[in-house]
Image (cartoon, rainbow, N blue to C red):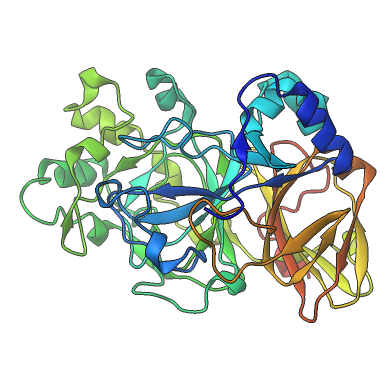
Length: 416
C-alpha cells in the first residue's frame, strides 16, 4: 500500500530518540484499524469503500479506528498487533507500546510511568450502521479474575464525523428504575427463546452532536449509530446482555467472553457483574451527560479549547479529552500538564514542525498526516499549532488518569 513503512521490532531506542528530537516531542502515528465480527460498519471513518473488509469477511467489517493505543483488541482470530498503534519516522514504523516501555518518562511523564508502567488509556472512533447489543464492560474486581482490567469509558459525538445519523441515533443506557436483578436473570434464561427482552427494561436517549456521555464500568449501554469518539481505560473487556439485535443473534460466548470459565453458566454471577446502583440511577442523564465546556484559560484570539470529556468516576479522574479549534491564519501554543493522543477531524496546518492534514479517504495500510502523540515533554513545554488552511483546524485529544488539577465536574456546563 502507499506510504507503507518498514516495521522495526528490535533495538528501537536510537530511532525513538531521533524521532522525539526531530519532532520536538511530537510523534507521528499511523492509522490502527479494528474489525468487529458482530457489527456493521457505519462507513464514516474515511476508510476507502473497498477496504472495510480488508482483514477478511470472516473477521467482519472494520468499524473502529484506535488512537494512541498500547492496548490489544481482544478479537477472536486477531492479528498479533491488532489494536496497537505504530509510530512512523523516516520510512520506519515501531510500536508505541514499545516506545513507552523504552522511554516511559519522556513519553508519558514520571508520575504515570511510575504508577502504571504503560500508557493506561486509549481512544477510538466507533462507527456503526445501526445499534449494537446492550452490554457492559466489567468492573476491575471482576475483570481481574480473568487477568484483565475493568473499563470505564466516555463518548463524544464529533460533528465533523457525523454527516448522517445512520439507522438508530439513540443509545440505551442503564436500566429503568425499579428493575430487579431477577428481571435481568430472566432475560439471560430466555437467551435461546427469541428476543430476550432486555430493552424493555431500559430507556433510550437521543444522541446529540457536539455532546457526550460518561459510562462507568458495570453500566449497561447499547450504543446508537452516531460515529463516536471514545476515550476509555486500556482494556477490551465486555459482556453482551442482549441476544438479538436487528435480527442478528448474539452468541452466548459474547456474554461470557471475559467471565471465568467456571462461571459461564452461573446466571447470578453474570448479573452480579453489573454496578446495580449506577444502572438504576433515577437521574442517569444528570449524572452522566457531557456538554462541552470552554476552557477560557486555554483559549484566545482565533482559537478555542473545549473540555469534551471530564468528571470523575467513583472519585477517580480516569480519562479526559478536549477539542481544539484554530481558525484560518491563527496559531496558538498548546500547553498541557500531561501527554495526549491527537486526531485531526477538520482542516490542515501544523503541530510544531509536523504537518496536520485531515484526509478525505484512506486506503487500508496507508499512512496519514492526521494523527500524532503529544508526549509529556512536548505537552508540558508547549507546542505551537497553526492553521495554514482555509477552514477551521479541529483536533480531538485525550489524556490519561489524574492529569488535570482543574478538571470540570459533571454539570459544570450549566455555569457557562
